[in-house]
Length: 292
Length: 317
Image 1 (cartoon, chains in turn red, green):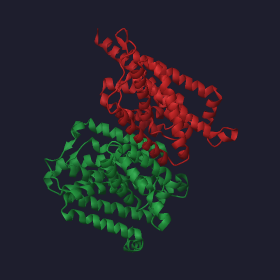
Image 2 (spheres, rainbow over the protein chains, first blue to last red):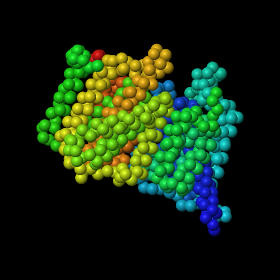
Image 3 (tube, rainbow over the protein chains, first blue to last red):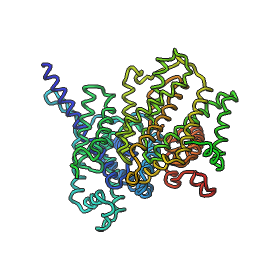
Image 4 (cartoon, chains in turn yellow, purple):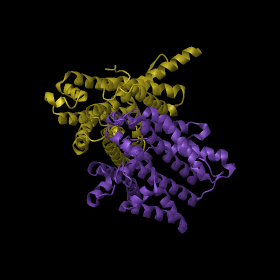
């Protein structure tokens, strides 16, 4: 095999890994962007909710011995339930508060969740054994678990996008995103939409966590990384714009994958954050939106 | 400016007497010769000064600096580099922390000019990202010791009394600056930016200049503290950039009362002792308890303890 072919296969491998990773990141970030878009609240506990979803899958698989994909039946309703609880206990009180309030409340929540996870399940690294066989195509390995996770993530994302685009509730959610003061004037109960978006948002996050458990080992401590990667995804796609975050996720996945292959794995968060700051500065409305 | 008259006038408030008493009492500590007590109160002073630092940009100006630890870390590293290269001059090492503060202030200027264009949650995310980006960058720079950090024991020796006194002086500076802010045009402009930046701009406040200045002074103070702590620990590492640090400052500030003169002092003292009690009594539950306290404060006493007291006594601000 010549050098050029070798380079090409590494390049392709990196690209494919990045895209598979990116689809998963897109799903994980979608809950964050939905909640931000509707309520203008940044869920700093986002990574903790993701890891909770991962634990839900892990324990369902370990205890019941079922296929990890079936555990979505447990983790998604769990996320939805958590969303409702969080909405009625906390979010309801801070929807119209200044951002410092919501940032600190959700930071407090992230501390509580992290402590609970550490108490219940310790800091041990958890991971599921390989479920699906890998595919080898002309020198490129496609890891089966990642492929299944990415496809599921894309399907779930598409369902969300179709729901937002065509259903009545979805259109109501988009109306609140556009103007939460005008939405009640056309007969939308904003508080129902807030509760619903929190519910759907955390259900999606939980689903993302489940797929994460399928592909990557995790501990309660890694949650912060996923909060920050999710920020990058949603900022790239435009905060509060779920379609944008789908593309944003793919870009972030590819960027992280290429940095890890061609530069240094440890430096990929820095690359991600430099990218984040640059986008916030020059295109804060996201790279896909046209200026209105 | 702080004039004799303004200092005399401030004596009239009961609160100022409390401040003077705190400063006097805290000045005594190292002279008791009790090293453990000095070491404990040193970390309290550190938190207090840092809370005053974040109070300038977040409390007065309304910009939530979630990555404030970046100034602390940069101050520590800059001071360490100066100590390593210039220790032969023989100046007392704490003088070098001023350079650390200056480098942090320079960084605050460079970062502040673009980042302060962002508002609200965007600003918070951007500062947080800057913090993490710098942290990871520093841990990958070989000249700065990488993830291992820079040990300083070869150049300077451990001396807690001077560290304590330097920190005390910085505290006085931070307090005086905050007192001045609460009574000067500069401070009123910052508060106007916090209430409504657009209106402030229309009313003729040079908002860009004022908020950048507030950010720079805030970064300067945090940088000096980082430098002093680096010298007293005789070691700097990427741990100095931990984002928990900024959260600590924000929580102390909220506990006491954001944008007030006394709030950071009251808040950091209470935070410090609550943290101490919780960490020693419930080591496995401290995050949970802190999270609950944080949520409770933010939801039920958003104005902080000073507001609770103020309702009863009045004139405490």
